[in-house]
Length: 362
Image 1: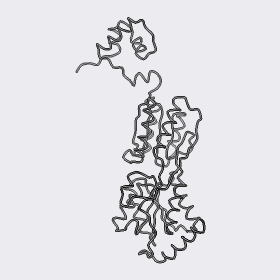
Image 2: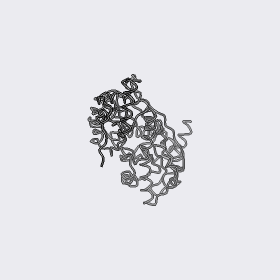
Image 3: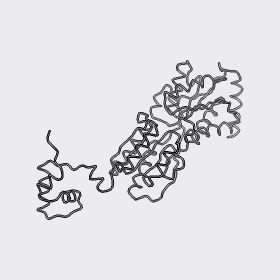
Image 4: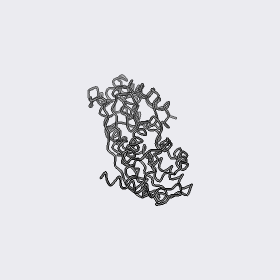
């Protein structure tokens, strides 16, 4: 195997120093035409290719950014990262995408890459409660980190989220307006901002309608299909059984659908269901999922734009949180509750009561 030519080989053939070759190749040195021609000829004859990473580091920057996602196989994070990547590449940056598997140790390893100069900045998308270590590393990298989708408390960096509480409220109001009073919620992990806010919206809508939340009707899970599939079993153990469920994400909603199918529970005939995310794939489900749509493309695009501006010295506005709007997309997974329910009596009477309440509020 032939040895690759080095900058020293080029310098020897062109009869100049390696530093002269390096500076001439990166455009920081003017040379007489004859000298420049000798260097060009040596580069061509030796098939020399500069080490791009070394050249970047020698200039004090990597011209690359990192994107941390909890799970690249999750369509939500894949779409978000893909949009951010397009923005960064268009701005002249290489992009490294790391799938952290939602493990803090893997996230911290990415911050090590940032500290070593391997990348210039990080777009951080985490999906778990911080134990303080992430906040510490974010604070140690001022002007080089943007947080998207999920909060890391006690950090003063740009953050881009959606209106989670409003989305939870809209989802639950939609179910109430269809006549439901037994509305359970299966949401994300305890201590995670989005899960807390979406559950708050669910509770607000029920409270305004005068509907009491029974104990055990808020179930915590993960924003993944399989954990949600298992945790959704708790919904069907409730007595009386809910006639409707607000799921904290589309992945959780799919887990509920799996559990319902295994038990012979029909959606929406026996159980109405609303998700949160508005993933395109949910249109293909049977039935198509009603969901709170969030602007996934805007989350990724704005996050990358803010990061590129910061590390390029074009954004001195510092920290601040941007909230993007959400909107309910009604599809086929919601209908009015049945007049009689196999899980308990009184559905007809409760339905009339709620419809009357909603009508008066209008």
